[in-house]
Length: 124
Image (tube, rainbow, N blue to C red):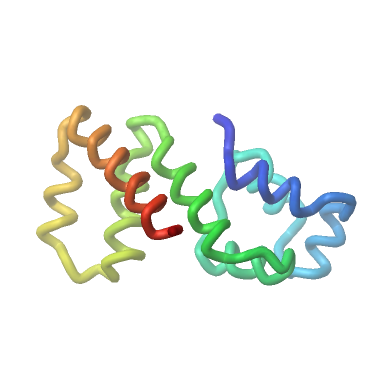
């Protein structure tokens, strides 16, 4: 699956080797490679490390990170819902988690669209 975040990380790396990134960030080069190819996604902490290393706005990388999550296949939906609840709501709203977990496929698409619209609004 294409990864907006992975593409941006490759672009930011430019002429640096993965070994250079490993030395500069402490993140193993194989892990960074998986982020760039979209085979894995970084944690929030790892994303902050990469943003700082590349001197690129964390919020811009974060937006790409969430766009990638929102485009995941349906079977990966609960990963997104868990991240949204745990990260954005800091594990405080158990009722919301239950509601998100029980959404129909159609409701999930609507939720994805709303979340993407929110990301675009928060950028402006």
